[in-house]
Length: 380
Image (tube, rainbow, N blue to C red; front, side, top):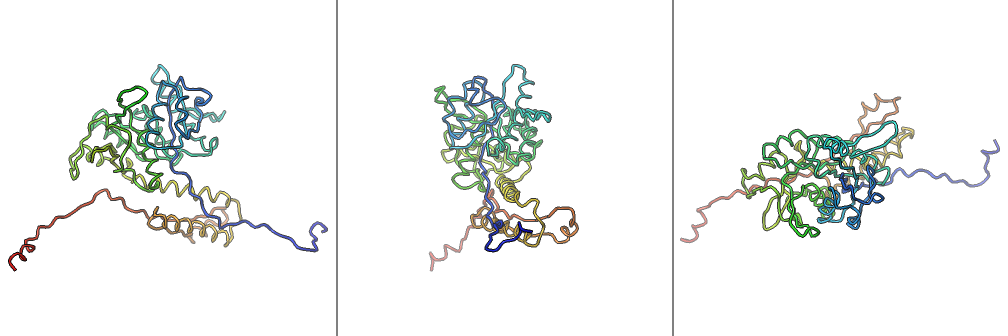
């Protein structure tokens, strides 16, 4: 055919299947808050809004939780925050419903914390740390936050009720993949010109992001100093080496607290409610999502040897890069020959990979030996 005839030179632009996998942002905070007097144009109800500095505090209103939560985050560090403002209500049950929200399958309307699911579509960022201060201590809200965290592959930071040790432990044991904190914070609020007690989760979210910025999201925020606070609202004793201090008792039940030591205030606790180390879970989420996003362009291609080799090569390069940066101890990628051969004709390819994490030194043990032999030289 004439359309296929060419007397000359032509050029085909082939895809580059060796592009590096980009690591997604790990430190975006998702904040669900109330503020009936906030600027409605800046913070529309039930709509994800991007805040990247404390300059928007002036439009956050004085009522509700929005302004003080943002202040406590930014007292620790600069951060990118996705805010979903919800309406308060005189009826407590209705207010809890506003916070939890819903998804209308007919209209596609998201309300309450469910609007976080639309943040990536609307704003281009996905919340990775979820908080709802003044609400997350409620029995109705905690399970909804955990479910939302699993959908977003984010870590909910949930406040304990501060209603006593036994009650708080029972609250934590009912949860799984959440970072559970208890004790509140005491801060000096310059606007009020007085010290006030507040829920802990915004301060901890800001603290985690600061550690992310300084050390990397793969490092634990525990035993790092928290800035601009006076202490914990609940008195929590801590003594180095003590197994019976309240701080250690809380930690042994996967509840993180603020411990005063060395003249400062420190986050104390590494584990999610299911015992998983916080940095390890965050690595799993970030690495997994980064791999999926990078390979979306590989969907609907012919499954050839070059295709499979290309996927393996890209993931291997990512794992080597993570190893060199100290994010993981090691990693490996492979394809299961038997599983993939059994899937021939289904349009599905299976690729397996492993991650080896560094242990976190929660317990450092020194052993002291008394040696009488050292005195022998006196009489030599």
